[in-house]
Each structure stands twice: as structure tokens, then as C-alpha cells.
Length: 422
Length: 107
Image 1 (tube, rainbow over the protein chains, first blue to last red):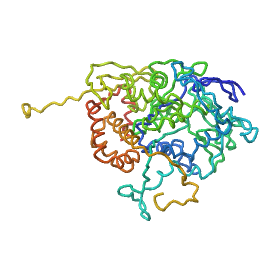
Image 2: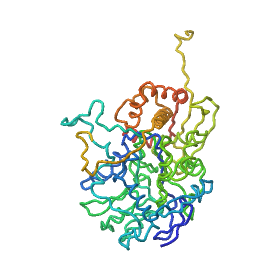
Image 3: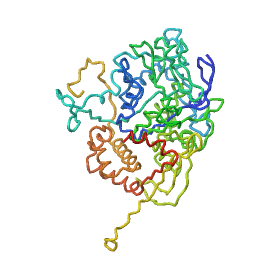
Image 4: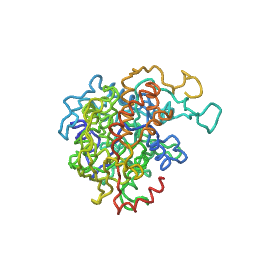
């Protein structure tokens, strides 16, 4: 095992290979507060990449209802349980979230899936702690809510009020997921064929279909369960981050790097994807006006999903503000309280950056804010809210302007016929 | 499940899970959806529809639990702040042509 630095954990950790980092890293931010589980992302991915025979159970992009939903069923609870069994009572963080880019969430002193070896790991040759989900666990992309909403014996007709959908009598939220294209992928570490690789130009993790022999070690090792086995070709497949679009080689893209299909289809405008610059040591290079750098490292409102697994996932989430904090701390680490506080009381810059979500399908590499006059000052639920007539401008890879969004106070022009009416 | 009563022998049925049903969380969730969609430029009838439609289980659950009156009050409170402004997007000219085809596909 080599030693690599994992900035999510704030420390070095064991990994089967030496550290190697891409020039830029595919990363994304999902704002959970906006997700209504319309499943447009899920279907955009399905209809693009996994509509063939043998891929029926594959949902590279899915939205699951937390806390009880999961695809495959209970994927996160099972991995957390394995880690707890390997290191009873020791899965804890110390320190506090800080401005240090190498330890933004403090330090995790427990064991990662690469470190939790020993009696738990079977067989001995396994490099990564994990489990192989049973076939039944892949049956439901969002259990309880992925059923037809028609009446019994009435095909192809929705129930008028949808009342056959379950009613949840508790807090819950929707967690949209794709492959996190991790910096230290569990799937890559576990593959005995070395069929999985991380691209040096954008950090996208791919399975070489020629090399794969379908041993399913990647399915077992990925803690997020985003590597999936295809029975009729006997090889594994996973999210490819729509790389032709990211490269700007998709016919639609006209040479301009575009966001993935799941991002582009998002109706709730919860998603933003980009390519962040990397330092030699695996941390993100300072890029103050990159929207993802801003959300993760400056505003710190976007947090990694289960950082304690140790893979340094490149998907970040703005946590849902109504969910019990203990649950969120387990899911997103110790930065949760600060992230929610900041998100609920956004400053001028954060409000402007949040306007960049889904205004365009092209990848944003930089933003700029042109400040305008104050147009509103008031209170909402006891908190001061100030709005400005600001314009946020998004720029592309070559520095070209992509679009600009302005916050405006609508002007209503009274028609001449009513010019003097009250 | 939608068609029949749960079968306790079915491995896909969740059993034995207890979670607190917190009314404050419902209120907070209703505020979150109303505020987020008000910020996106949705108007009152559109946000109301989001809560009323049973197919958006999160918002609809809050609507069922809190009732029409309270949800409407929450929506109006959010729109009182965020409904004052509108967001105007302007595509950069050189890029607009390149993406015109895709936008047409989306319509």
C-alpha cells in the first residue's frame, strides 16, 4: 500500500497505488434543497447510455429518497456498517472545519475502505472493503416511489390524484447520484485486471471494456455502488461522465465543452458541473472565480458525499436544510452546520453564483460579477435579505463569454389609456 | 406498495424502521421548496401547483400535512421577497448560434 494525501480527510491514507492526479478534475455540485425527484436526469442518462438489452437494471444516474431509499438498496448503510465492524467506535472526526484547503473539514481518524483490512476482509487478496449487492437489491432505482401510479388492472393510465404513491410521515429528501469519478477510486483499486483507469486530462474514471473480464471486484469495492455488471456481455460498466460532451466532441457541442446529459436535463436547476484545476499534491488549485472552487472552498456550502469512505469523491452537495443534523453530519462530514448556515443566509456573491446553475449547457470555467445598485432590503423569517441589481457573467474554456444573468426589478409600464387611473 | 398490502416475507419491503415525524421539518421543507422555486422565478400559481401535484412527493407531503392555508402563507412570504425581482438571461452572441440547435431540441 502507498501513502496518498486525502484532503477530504485532512490526512494521509493508504491506497494500493501511488498518487497520480489529472490536470483538471471532472467535478459537480448538486443543490439538494431544490431537488423534487422529477427523475429527468435519470431518464436522460437511461435513454442515452443504458437502454440496451442487458442494461435493464442499470441506472448510472438515479435519484433516491433518503433516508430509506437507495440504489442498490441500503448501499450506504451496508458500507457504513462494514466500516463500523472493522473499527468499532473509531469512525470519528477531530478538529473543526477551517480555511486550510488541506483540512477544510478537520481530520478523520477512522478507517477508510482501503484501511479497514484484517479480519473483516474476505478473501485476503481483496484490497478494498466492500460487498457485492444481491440481485434483488438492484431491482428498484428508488424503492417505494418507482412503482406505476395507476389503478389496479388499469394499464397505461395514471391515477387521477396519484394517491397510490406512498405518503411519508417523516423528514426525507432526494439524493441525486452519479459516479463521483473519485480521486482515489475504489473500483480502480480493486480491479485485478487493471482495466479501470482515470484519464489524465479530466480525471474521468472509465472501464476498458476490452480488458474487463467481469470479475465484479469493482462492483464490490465501489462504496457508492456505481459500477454495475452486465450479464449478457459479462463485463462491468459505469457512468462515463458523457465524456464526448465534456471534450466538446459531441456533434451538439460545436467544439465547446458541454455538461453531461443528466446535468443538462435538470428541471429543478440543482446541478452544475465543471472541470477544476488540480495541484501536484492532489488538492484543488486556487481558482477564485471558478464557480465550483467558490462553492466548495470559498463559500464552503457544497460538501462531499460520505468523505469517510476515503475515495475523495468529486461530487459535492449543498445539504438539505430541513434534515436532522446528525444524519447530515454522517453523510457529508463535519462541514454541514457551517454550510447550511451560509446557504440560508447567502451573501451577495453566493446569490450571484447560485444564478449560474443551469442557465446554459456549456461548462463554465470562470465567472465575474458586475455589481449594481441595491433594489430591495427587507426581512424574511427574522433574517435580513438584501437584493442587488447585479449581473453575473459566465465564461467558457477559452475565456469567451457564454451568458450573463441579471437580477432586475420588473418595471410595469402603465398603458396610456390608464395613465391617470388609480 | 401501490397494488396490494405489504408482504412481510418480501425482501424488498422495508420493515422495522422508525424515524421521527417532525412537524418542524415539514415546515422547513415547505419553506425550502417555496423559497428555492421563488428564487428561480416561479410565480404563485406555479409554486402552488408544485405542492398540490401528488407526483412531487416531497412538496405534496408537506401540503397534505400542513394544509393549503399554511402552505399558501409560506409561498406568499417567500414571494414577498423573491417575487420582487426577475432574472434576465442573455446569451453571448457568438455562442447563441452554436447552441440554437440544441435549445430547439429541448423545446
